[in-house]
Length: 129
Image 1 (cartoon, rainbow, N blue to C red):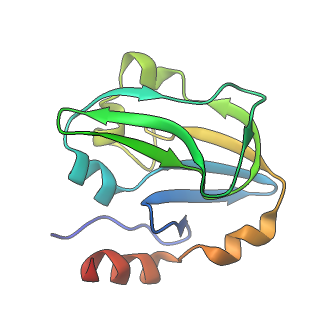
Image 2 (image 1 turned 90 degrees about the horizontal axis):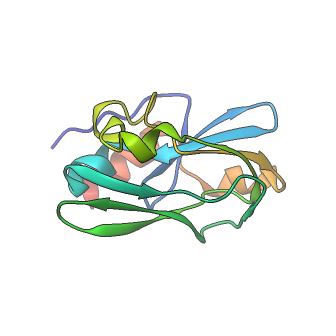
Image 3 (image 1 turned 135 degrees about the vertical axis):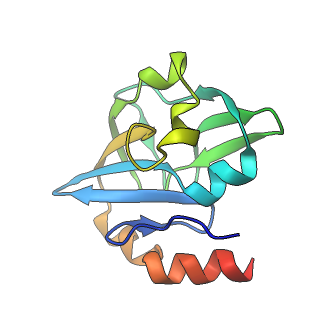
């Protein structure tokens, strides 16, 4: 199965993606993750102002198949969540790297980015999984 793995993002082995702009990190789940989950029916996201901790759950995504934790690939303060996903969780299936983003963080430990995979590393990781 071939997944869409855009260049220029960072990826966790738990299948989250990170787009960094300045000190802000936008986070979502990867194309591989949404494909594995199937049709997403519900998403629970953190409260704005809460603290995300590296590789700790920051939300839950539920599909017709399973419920899975969303792990924060970085530590930081939650600046924004994608409220639109409450009404339209299927946007993650349709556009996981765009309209299906989940959380924006103000990074508190940007060096954690060094623990994440680049697009080539993530593509190889899911190929071998």
